[in-house]
Amino acid sequence: MADITNQSLNEIIENVKTKKVSSTELIKAYVKNIESAKKLNAFVTTTFDQALDKAKQFDNKPNFDQLLPGIPLAVKDLFCTENTKTTAGSNILNNFIPSYESTVTKNLWNHGSFLLGKLNCDEFAMGSSNETSHYGNVINPVGDQLVPGGSSGGSSSALAADLTPATIGTDTGGSIRQPASFTGTVGLKPTYGLCSRWGIVAFASSLDQAGPMTKTIKDCAIMLEAMSGFDEKDSTSINKKKEQYSKNLKDNIKGLKIGIPKEYRVDNMPKEVDELWEKGKKILKDLGAQLIDISLPHTKYALPTYYIVAPAEASSNLARYDGVRYGYRSKQGKDLIEMYEKTRSEGFGDEVKRRILIGTYVLSSGYYDAYYLKAQKVRQLIKKDFDDSFKKIDAILTPSTPSSAFKIGEKTNDPVSMYLNDIFTVPVNLAGLPALSMPAGVDKQGHPLGLQLIGKALDEQKILNIGYAFEKNCGFKNKIKKWWS
Image 1 (cartoon, one colour):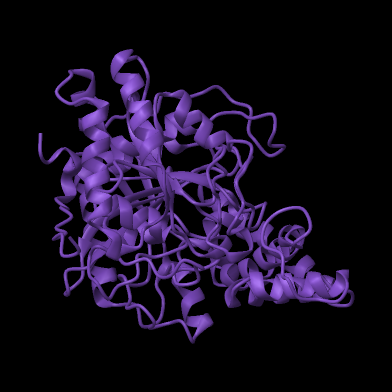
Image 2 (cartoon, helix red, strand yellow; image 1 turned 180 degrees about the vertical axis):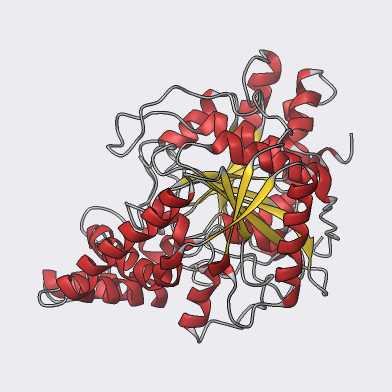
């Protein structure tokens, strides 16, 4: 079965269950792909020997009742993995080997999966292009000059290039959905609290959320089912009954009301993005959904609000990296204070330092009320806009990003232009809602573009169902040529 890695996760699971392919054969196929794709720079760490051992154990004593039987998975290098290096894309964690496993990855392993390797990401998840990683740029398989999006760029690149059958990322302001859009894959940011944050290297604690990145909507439902669940170790985890997202997937969306927000049109948005949105509306209408124009008036304040709240939380979370207990320590400095300063200035990259400075500034005496407190009030207004709209609609359809993947180096010297890339994704994080990016078409250069479905809190099933119906009628095929091998 030479082309097993081209298949969807669901197809691979069926092939394992029917013994058309063994877990060991699967591992070997992915290892071969990974070793021939070093140009993409998607992996920071590989765990091939460990994965091969687990695959052999599974083949000797298979358990086909599991959700992910004998399936190897590579994960974003923000999830702590026991006895396996976890760097968060940063020099300051270049020697950090956790003695514990994140809850989300543990859930995946409990469902029969095992680790293939750790994927490159923007440093501490701060970036929209995977250019801030200490381990270098990740390349988008769509084209050798293109960014894969960020911060989960290694995840989106590895998935699109068939280096892992599915993966997981984290989304603080769009870091799952934007890279999914740029690579023609599916990305879901779940409701805040649905997936545990325990064991994930923190960026902004009130915004961070782990989620699946897959080739299809069905795969996304399988992954979400496996990784979600209540965790008493995470104080923000939601204690609710586990849902069977993949079993309950259906494509009948007749009568559902889909909101179209007028605020999601921005200046200089490429015509193709607008046309894609129109195509998406038509598909949903033809499937029996009702389109309703809505207004989310505080959307225009989402980006400035986010870039106050997120850096403020980051400056607090990143205070723990001081060179004393773990991670990188500078060899310079004549006393403790100087060692702290040198460690942090040598250990953190420019984008992380920029956000720490912004965050420390907005939390400082005299500015806390003017910036941070005001941003928290605006955040509540943004959430209220969504709450009010959801009284009359079932979901919201918007573009995922204001453009397709841009060139490496194109926005690195213009942080504001880079931040504007998250304009359609950030409001959802501020409101704690679930949102799904699904591939929907291409621009004139043939680069993928995505559409976003936003749902009510804990209404993942509904947006997965709408996405499932859309996917069947959209006709998108990811045509990536393997130029890198």
